[in-house]
Length: 371
Ligand code: T4K
Image (cartoon, rainbow, N blue to C red; front, side, top):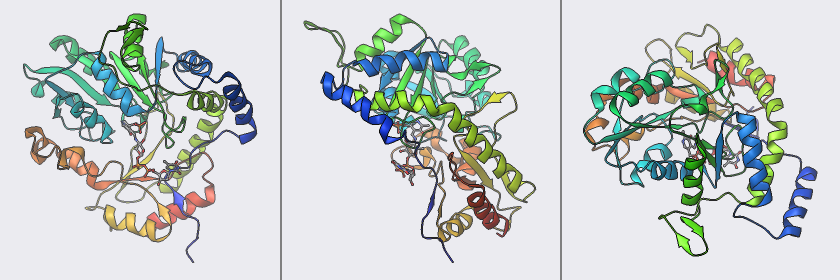
């Protein structure tokens, strides 16, 4: 019999309501709702400490953070990026009138393949926009070596990488800027929200102007900024989420490890998993279904899970380079992006969240085993 309640890809973490009320009371008393309110300021400084980064600027969502990061670095022309991401990554270039140039991904983690970047650089290239897909770090040292050699800026879309550390340091400390998403579906959520991590006070100030219409003071507007501010309700939620964060990541780790145990040795199923020297956030549980080895293809497995009320997701399908908006670009050709096309046709992200039970995991893995 099919259970009535679906198992969703994720279930947003929420603080208990009784803890939220005092924060709401404060907002109601202060009547200060947005524009650098007290909770906004407190969350910025607490997050910078928690993530071990020098400067952070809060945003209304991750997409606005991406668009603003590009504005901050004054990019133009062409930017090298990956087609294997959520559409927001490439859309942020489109919103800045920049041509995306897609480079293929590596076959282990699905991150941009650094060995292919240099061949894609032209006179018009101004930056590399890479993504730490599923929270697994890109090859940052190689990206930054190439960027230095060709005088390019580097932005990391770290929407999946809240709290991830590699070799003991935050992966947010790489590149010129990193952006985060605090969307409901992320490991740290403020309902909607996002941030830019920067490495100098001067840059932070520039970002803060850009997210507030470019207003310097009552009489001076110095840039064509946008409205991308985080409000006090979001910031209050963020402060409460932070208290629970480590506990939730520990629970995610148990879920992740139980999945690994249950999926061990199944022909044609490969888990995209973090390396050992990583402090992971266990944000996603992606598997690749290899039709040549497995008795089933990705779409059939996806449907079978759905028939059993398990709503997994094909993150990331369709491949960004294959959608109408971008498929006429030269770099979108299948020949240029064989690995990304393969990943996109094989991937399923299985449900993962702190309260997913072992029983639910068994239900999911049993369906995969019986394929
Ligand atoms: N860069 C990357 C690499 C990203 O992955 C994202 C966002 C961004 C940039 C942009 O950041 P933001 O501007 O979003 O801050 C979801 C999210 O909407 C999106 O934030 C996320 N990436 C992407 C990977 O996933 P959808 O279209 O799959 O969302 P949706 O509404 O179908 O939600 C997925 C599932 O989550 C639902 O089936 C049920 C569950 N859910 C969702 C919401 C919103 C809940 O249980 N409660 C909720 O409130 O894109």
